[in-house]
Image 1 (cartoon, rainbow over the protein chains, first blue to last red):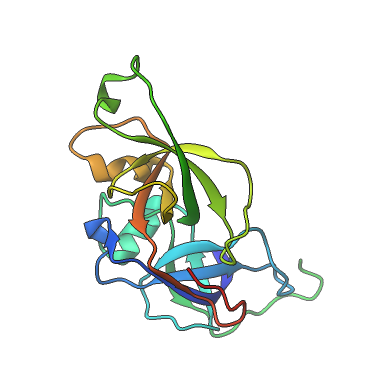
Image 2 (image 1 turned 180 degrees about the vertical axis):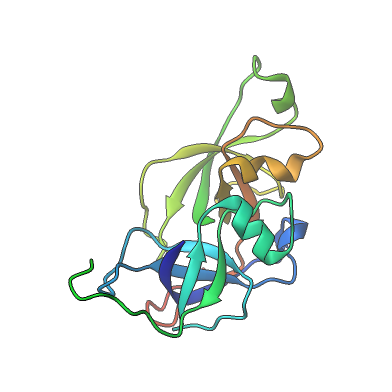
Length: 93
Length: 94
């Protein structure tokens, strides 16, 4: 799982039936220092996250599908948690 | 999933039997501000897209699930047509 920030959302009316009823969030994965980590990904929302929130991003199919409750569907990433706080031992990167 | 735009099609006669009847499309991956990122890829279509459309696609084993119960050998599939993109910070639009 990755730490990410929800930067927006995407609306699609014609899509895989298993995506119906779930928001599609644009999530920027982040490094621990808060800087951008790679490309923005589109993830289905399993926890009602909002724009600007720091979230837990799953980028693997099985966990993403399970969290959204749609097994055997074309979902490769999902927002599966909203992060309250991250505690680090000083020096961790 | 990732954003992309359909920029072409691929025709293949001799192919895996499970790929029969599937459309092979060339997609340019895009960033949320609709600038290009990375190189074009060939991917399958699960929603019936047209040329030039803004879409989002799924990668990995999950990309074959829209075609169940047939096990289609694909590593990337278009799973939705994008109507609008709402990124407040970047001001991006579809």
